[in-house]
Amino acid sequence: MSAASEGPVSASEAAALFADLSNTRVLILGVSGGPDSTALMWLAARWRAGAQHGPTLIAVTVDHGLRPESAREALAVKRLAAKLGVAHRTLRWSGGKPKTGIQQAAREARYRLLADAARKAGARHILTAHTLDDQAETVLFRLARGSGIAGLRGMARLAPLPACGEREPTLVRPLLSIPKSRLVATLTAAKIPFADDPSNRDPRFTRPRLRELMPGLVAEGLDARRLSSFARRMARADQAIERAVDEAQAGLSRGSAGGSIVFGPGFADLPPEISLRLLGRAVAQVGNEGPVELGKLEALHAALAAAMAQEGRSARFRRTLAGALVTLAGEITVERAPPRRSGAKPRKGPFTKPR
Image 1 (cartoon, rainbow, N blue to C red):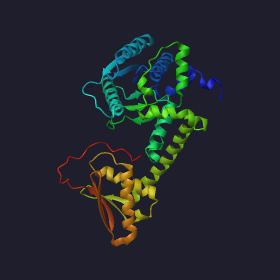
Image 2: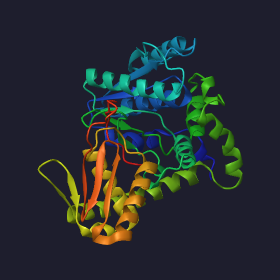
Image 3: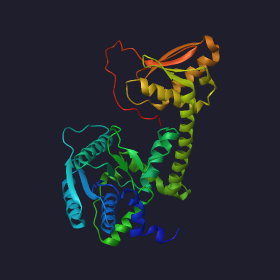
Image 4: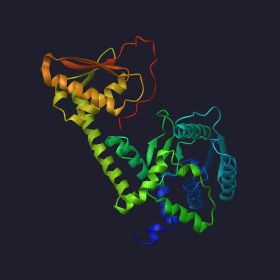
């Protein structure tokens, strides 16, 4: 690898990273003050300054109120933004904080506040500073948790905003192919200061522990670039499988007046990965208890396959998952499950493709 490929990000590189956003009216930049997001703001400002008709840039810092330094860091971002000609907003995560799962809750709060800022500004895109290193950590994180192909494809450059509706702003990760070291080199060369968040090294959290493992993995050849390549290959495979599921759905499934989904006899002849995803789509569409967990879906799929193989057309099967009832009586029917007898209220939430 050449020294240039590890040096600062050039103006021409930055122009290529942001090129598809040239015709947007407003861009929201998520800027915490750390090296990655500070580099995002600096690079975006330089790109916009060199463009003839660039979009309006608004940097948004979310102060989670979890560290005493956070208010000072937000002020530092505001000052730098002013020097760069970028508008700035500081938004605060108010209310009580959970005692467990604090990082996940903080992440959800950040996206929610960024979406609010985008709506108020009329922006359709929110930019975050996820890097090549973040992609590698995401793949390792999901691999450790037993994710399927959909999860191992990692993060996409363009994605729906997490936990938001379909009409919410699009999340854009323009720096996903850039190593963190190059962003630090970019700021160093430009003499731009940045904050250091000690929670990024806190061993109580999973991602910092994964970062500690990276040097050993690199020594074995498993560096961030190779993990990112793995994610791209998983994305290709996932796209191909989804296309096959689309075709199977068009040929085998039909809806009923009551909103249920019925699969014809060809379901049993599908490759397991295709029938698994097809079943998952139906459960997600009909059920009302939130995301479908891959492990539970696999267990349901295996039990259904066993029932079909054991008794053929005379088989009988009845199970529930995520608020959906799956029955087998000649054909497979997926319908809304009856209310729970215990009176427990189902969890409502958007469908997340099983990972």
